[in-house]
Length: 386
Image (tube, rainbow, N blue to C red; front, side, top):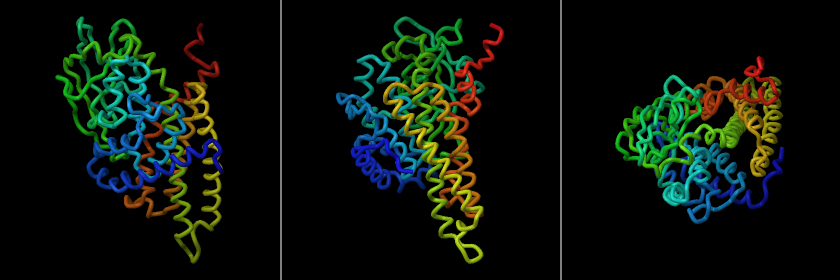
């Protein structure tokens, strides 16, 4: 189905992003998969081409474009012609907004130019060993020492954990409140800030995921984002956008899996005819196309709602839930249609299958998304005795 939410300027931008991904990212993917990390200059090259934080103000080097369709295009083209392990979406759309939207003028002037240029790579550290999505159970602590804070704790499964120059770290600041969290800007080189293992994963091989340790790290007051007790509220503020980011990538991944499979079933022959012409293959492909087109409409509409400030938490949760589940079904069926070739790492569908398994887990599991949607309907078991 033809997509109608983009205009000529978006199409022109997409063409330039596609060329960048094909020239600068795709040729390095195999090497990055082997190394388990992308080159730092992938970020600086993206920055030089205006592909980081397109929404950032021009005074910091951004394009000042408050139209999320441009970010959508970057994510789609990176998924299709770059690599999912190149986490520029985390940098631009999940972490940078904490600084740009909540930070002081001094913080923005100090950090945003390097963020936009790609010289300061970002990460966010929330997940801890044994807590997962349970932010209320966070054990990392920050203590106010008057002119600075002292941060202690550990984080795990941190994306961009090795490359990051600035990490937004969530830590408990009010021991009496389960929601009393602060957000702290921890910079590379701060004494007591250490990186642990670069963790091996099932998929997303080129993306560096790490353990981080904070041992009596002195964080200047100038590196605290907003109110040091309002971190929980700040984290919730951007969740709708974060889940839409994930949904855009999941949807595009599923579409890419479909496209390469369509090409494969047209060319691969069995019993003297293309395998795509067998009824089972034809019907499977037809079902997937219908579902993908329908889901793409939901995503494109969600982007327009985000642009208007109208995307709700439950709508974003639905986008994340539906796209991750659709991605799982499509990728599995596409691998099946590849037959034994699909199990071989040299075929792209094999790597897509490995990458896609995390989609129903990170950013809030499918089960958590269902809770959010269910509670939005007034079906909240926490209120049953009230």
